[in-house]
Amino acid sequence: MNNALRAIIPALTLCIGMQAQAQETAPLVPEKTQAEKDLEALNTGILRVAQSLDLAARTLAREHQAVWRLPDDRLLALLNANVQRTLLIATAKDKAAQEINSLLNQLNLPRFTTRAPIGFGRDDVKFDGTTNKFVIIPTEQPQPE
Image 1 (tube, rainbow, N blue to C red):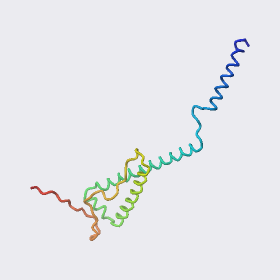
Image 2 (image 1 turned 180 degrees about the horizontal axis):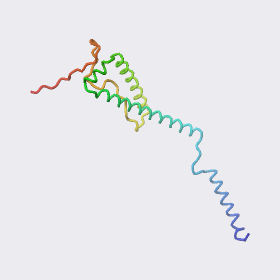
Image 3 (image 1 turned 30 degrees about the vertical axis):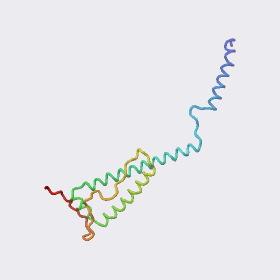
Image 4 (image 1 turned 90 degrees about the vertical axis):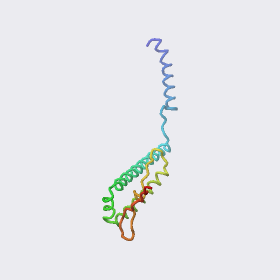
């Protein structure tokens, strides 16, 4: 080996050793602690739940609109086909919507703004307890002067 190489080898060895030591003490991407990994997994799970709740709220809103946008005759036929079932479904849907909305509100994440609708989709549709039927209450039209 020539003298120049003999002189460089200790310097290279020293540099390589220093780099290895620096990498051991300060990696470019530091390893996460178990607590940090656990917290990240928890946050990921919370986001998955929030996405599922948002999907449920959007699905309830879409289905709600599909029913309540029906023409009057079809809407009344649907609601009155089995009044007991209609009332049970409405109650269950409202309870689910309230819980979904409550959880989304608690999460308070700006990207999940949709909330599930609660109640009937039209103010002019009422349940008439004397006939046990859903009816449409005509809205009063302003009379021309």
